[in-house]
Image 1 (tube, rainbow, N blue to C red):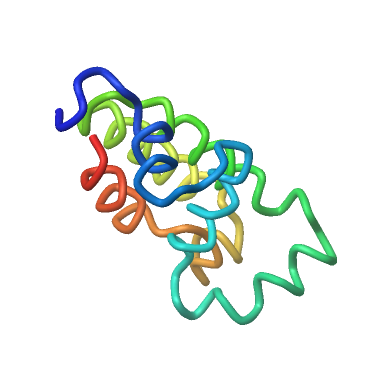
Image 2 (cartoon, rainbow, N blue to C red):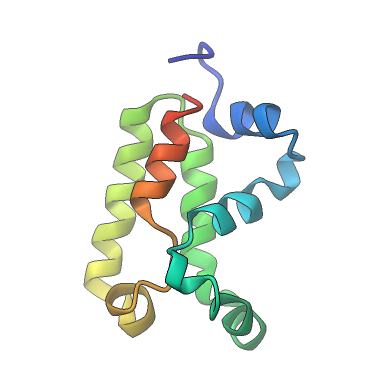
Amino acid sequence: MQDGSRCFREVYCQKTHCDSRRFRRRVFWRCLYPHALFITPVLLLAEPELFAPDLDLIKEVGEAVDIEEAAADINAFLDTCKLNGGLLHQHLRIRISGKKLLHLAATCI
């Protein structure tokens, strides 16, 4: 751990001068798959709850104090996507990237 027992959210917000209330949205946009960047704004307008699982994952990983905890949360999310992610989340990957989120968390915890 780089910063003792501080969680990913705390370290990320300090490093990026991000208000903790904006943490989930900022990480969401950083961790989207590149091909999802173009359609996501439209989908958010049409169906705001579509990305609730992604935002919930970011909140969970934000509380992680070590990389193993973050990886476990991300793996559980990806398993859920495989089981009931639907066309957008599972097949088209219109969601956040677990690898990007894990890499981002690893730079902070």
